[in-house]
Each structure stands twice: as C-alpha cells, then as structure tokens.
Picture 1 (spheres, helix red, strand yellow):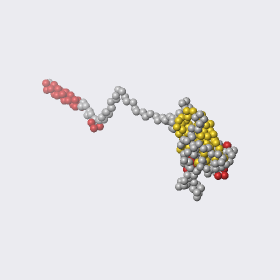
Picture 2 (tube, rainbow, N blue to C red):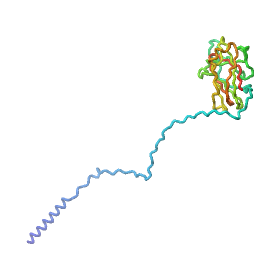
Picture 3 (cartoon, helix red, strand yellow):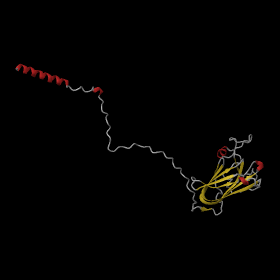
Picture 4 (cartoon, rainbow, N blue to C red):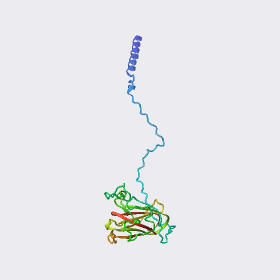
Length: 246
C-alpha cells in the first residue's frame, strides 16, 4: 500500500509540473517592432497665437489742402506788383533758317531776357512782332509739345491780395502769330501747395480779336499769393509783351 501511495504521489507531482510548463506566458512581441510612443510637445498653458499678417490696406490719398485766403496778405492798392520782378520761363523755340523747324543748334527765336514781361512797357498796335518789346513761345518746342503748354513762373516777394492779372499779346495772322487760346493761372503762398486761381479761355474770342493788334488779356481773380505760375496753350507762335499783377 505504501508503495502504491508513493507512486500516486509521484504521478501527482509530475502532472502538476506538466501543467506549470503549459502555462508559460507568451513571449512579448519583438522589441524591434514595438512602436515607440510619439513624443508629445508640451503645450504651454498660455498658447502663443499664430502670427497673422495684417491685410495690406490701400494707403489713403492725401487730399490737397483746402484753399483759404490769407487774411494778412498785403494789398496791392491797384499797383502792378510784378513790375521789375524777374521770372522763369519754359524753353523757347529755336528755329532753323534752313528748315524753319526746331533745331537745338540755332539760337532762341524772339528771346526773353527775363525782363521783357516786367519792364513796365506795354506794347501797342504800333509795335510789330520784330520789336524788342515782344518775346515768343511756339507750340512745336519739344518741352511744350510734351506738356501741352508753356510756363511763366514768378516770385512776387510778398503774399499779396490779388484781383487782376493782365497779359499783353499780339495777333498777326499773316505772320502766323496768334494770342494764346487758353491761359491758366496758378497761385501759391509757399511755392509747394498750388491752387488754380482761374482759367482764361479765349478760344471763342480769338476770331473776334482785331488783327495786327496788341491785346490785353485780363483775368479777374480773388486770391492771396506770393508765387504765380502761368500756363499758356497756343497754336503756332504766341507773342507776349507785358505781365501785370494787381
């Protein structure tokens, strides 16, 4: 009996050992194939907002300052404040005596020495175009062709209250000379900010102006200014004799 009991005990131990071997845990997956968890970037408690590029807005156009008359302007008292003043003019015509067209190698035709318009002498009907009192522009001058007008610029020296601007011009149809058909007057107190004082349109009156005669082209204005710019538009020759500013 003892032997039988001993044998049964051995069998039991052997059976337990076999069961233990069958319950060995499965091997873990190959470490090479194990996915490494993604390293998360720590998020600050205060997240930084994405930098947004502000929309490019169109720059606002600077509007020209509104014209206001200067209450401290000096009265002209009816006197010609342009008398004796120097001025600047745009390019004058250089006419070839061979082609009768523009040629920069020739001298200026009917030149101005910066005093013909302010020397105090107002031409009359007795002054032919060849008289020294006249100076001239021509619309075929390169600068005038590009711009469309000739210019006269003057510094009056002080800010004046202006009411009248007069240009003396010649009409001589046979010689191809006519008065400017449009004159624009611009004024400024500082030489930087300019205002159109008035536009004198003579187109409709050109035919009615007497021929072979000097004409005073008068513009009525109501401005205060120190600087004056005159823009003249003409066909062919435009002869000028005197500028008066009152």
